[in-house]
Length: 106
Length: 121
Image 1 (cartoon, chains in turn yellow, green):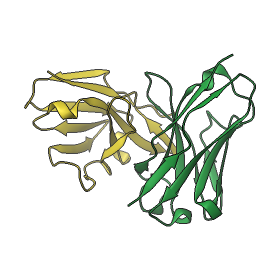
Image 2 (cartoon, helix red, strand yellow):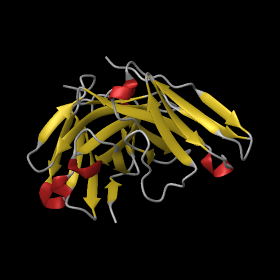
Image 3 (spheres, helix red, strand yellow):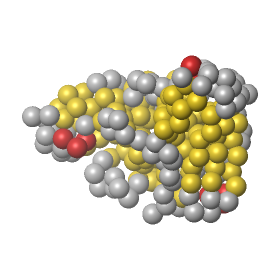
Image 4 (cartoon, helix red, strand yellow):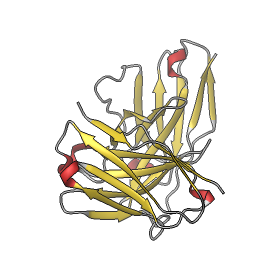
């Protein structure tokens, strides 16, 4: 079965760029979505179709997908961005999630 | 505005049955796929399955096939997830979510607030 791999944690000082990776075999053959999940809350879609932002998502969030790795970038991370970030693809009509990466802004 | 409102917390004993719900509003309920996603404490998201209310087509994840039943009642714009016999390992938060554009294999755009299920003797 298809697998997505994410590092467990990322830590950046406020105002710096936070990078999240999501790895999978021939990942760029699929559309990747990213979700932000703050503590005690439901996930929120922040990127879909690799790089598109839903309305209401700040433009400091961006995404890309190339080869075996998709990347979510938060430019100028803020304390409000602290959360777990999950990547997601569909494989043979089954939704696959990565394990999630926790962002700490300190 | 789209809302998915879930039925809340459930505390059950092993072997008991359970049916939790997710009520949609602010959109045409029958035209959008609704999925169920499990999240165990401190863990990642796990896809359970998805249903298209208009024709009741259901696609289960192989990991959950035979373990749960997904259904809808379109007269009340509500999706359901049910268990016939709960186990302690079913203790988790369960989210419903709709996909974008009425397409099964799109991003999960809207999420419910979650149903916390605790199974303990």
